[in-house]
Amino acid sequence: MTLMKSVFVLLALLVVSTRAFTVLPLTRVSYISKTAASSAFTVPTALKSLEVAEIPSYESKESPKVLGGIKIGLRKLVVVTGASSGLGRECARSLVNSGKYFVIMAVRDVDKGKAVAKKFNFPENSYTVMKLELASLQSVRDFVANLKAFKSARPLTHLVCNAAVYLPKDPKPSWSDDGYEMSMAVNHLGHFLLVNLLLDDMKKAKGARCVIVGSITGNTNTVGGGLVYPKADLGKLKGMESGGKQPIAMMDGKNYDGAKAYKDSKVMNMMTVSELHRRYHKSTGITFSSMYPGCIAETQLFREKRQWFRKIFPLFMKYVTGGYVGEQEAGERLAQVVDDPICSKSGVYWSWNGGAQTVGRYDASGKPKGAGGSGGEIFENQQSDAVQDRDMAMRMFDLSFDLAGIS
Ligand code: NDP
Ligand code: PMR
Image (cartoon, rainbow, N blue to C red; front, side, top):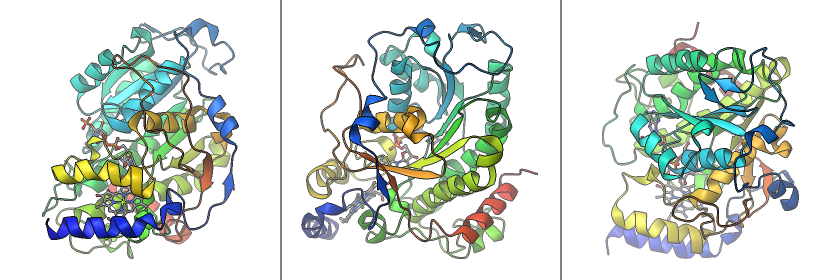
């Protein structure tokens, strides 16, 4: 057994005694009842688009039934980034199955996105696949232009910023088209530009929501984020202040560390939500949310990790920490933040109090086996002091404007 494996096993034993820290921070704020959380999101057996008239209609004068030549009924319009894999794919599936949403799958690989829709039998009039390469600011701008042309005058009601890369094994940084370190560019900067370009449009919609996926590993007030190195730390933002471009890889200005770059990007995701809420919630009415779905230990996020890690990690999360959640259930959790009336409060970082089921609820063809709804209780989680640092968030937000080329 290698040294790394021995350390892993030892730590696993250590964590057995700290199981209570599942997905919880060291303190938590409030709970919402499981019944309230799970009842709002059921999966109908068939799409009945014209029976969803109770959904608030758009304030646009356009007919709500046809969009870009596609019949979408009165469904709400949601963009999900990274809908070709893992959490984003399952969130898209849950939203399509709800019958309430027309899903715009914003993906870097259009063929892969189409294959996902085909595999899960998404009804023709419930989705479209659009190219979005988050490692290129120009691609983000092109996506927004295409989106606006597609949906004509109808406002976007929901935006889910989910896509991400995790590059823990790369000894040297890789760079986006614009010369930014890849995980910061894809996970934070591309989404930052996307949200900012869509705000004006979304504020026209009633009940609009923007969700950016965060993580426990960006929060140092947790076991997952506080005890496992490297820890997230934006330092004094020296890297960002110096323009954040090649050869500067880290936003704190220090040497490159791929795992830390991911965790830093998650901090920026969560700070962005808090800052969006503070700056724009009152004036736009948009609900801004962040969330941690649980540890979805089997997704492609861990593609760079060694095979032994990818085998043991889900078992460790299931049977040692208890922080595991399956892809389907995680997707339903994200869809809950998009759709559930209890998640209409803005500025919240949502989490679930364990209770995830480990058995899938869909058969191989993608048909639901039974009722949907998440195990575990949703609650308003508390972020670390570092993530809640207002001055840092403001500075990070303002510098992101510069880096993303927003004037
Ligand atoms: P996956 O790797 O399965 O999914 C990531 C998605 O992002 C894929 O669809 C991928 O596209 C897309 N993507 C990657 N790079 C780009 C790019 N340059 N432009 C556009 N899209 C891109 O990972 P997960 O589903 O696990 O991760 C989804 C979210 O969940 C992330 O924000 C992650 O930080 C978060 N998260 C994950 C946890 C986990 O335990 N897995 C825990 C906490 C948070 P493609 O399909 O082409 O690869
Ligand atoms: Mg972590 C006790 C709780 C706990 C939780 C909820 C997570 C979540 N992790 C916990 C503990 C531990 N982890 C411990 C004690 C160890 C040392 C054995 C450990 C290790 C570990 C590694 C090597 N964990 C990891 C990795 C990764 O490569 C993952 C990562 O950091 O990706 C950025 C990861 C994760 N642990 C989690 C979660 C949710 C991840 C995925 C990270 C994310 O997407 O944010």
